[in-house]
Image 1 (cartoon, rainbow, N blue to C red):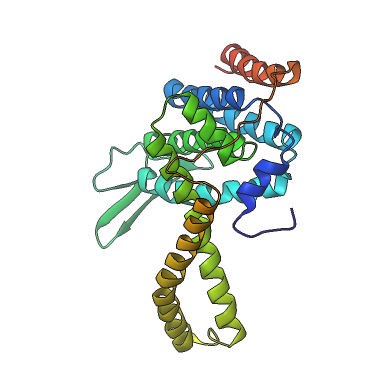
Image 2: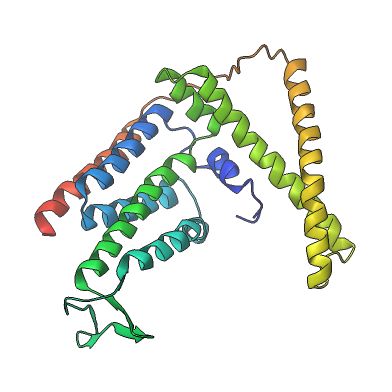
Length: 268
């Protein structure tokens, strides 16, 4: 995908090959996969979910594999850092170290304090990390193929209060307003050499923050005026598209269940 700006996720959902799939079915499948990863607490389920959702998004959703990895890399960095915190132990050890290449124990001493990795902490970190990535991939399957308006209609069917739905919609849109305002300000500052060195960067950044609130409030007011001009009366009404459930959709969903069942017998 050539366009790399911050609207990428929203654009993916509109051009996805799964755009015409039934939204409720996608939501149920995504939540079911998420619950399977969380409740089973199994490394193989997490890895298979991650792999299957990646294949589904790339083959059926027509998301470029490189773009999918790029999107997954952002949460992976945070998960990796959190995994290190789980993995690395401090203080007295039981001696059951995790060994590199089967023979090199991971244990160092800094100013008399031991930092080490045990087999238990290593596999705990791996399990938690894979569980997080599997859960994220299940959510990516939904968000990369379903526009926000359709997701909100699904929430409305679930009888989520209108206030919460409208807040979700407006917050989502205003995040884009803030991002776009910040991008325009930064582009203007860069064109005027506002980031040519450290000192000017600090000055430009501080002025940008001061202006961002004012600009965002003005744009938010403009958006609200536009909504009122189109008949907004306090309730957001979004047209719902009807998508039929097809055999292809059911087969993809059943394939995931089949993979999990087969793995429980083959991979023990």
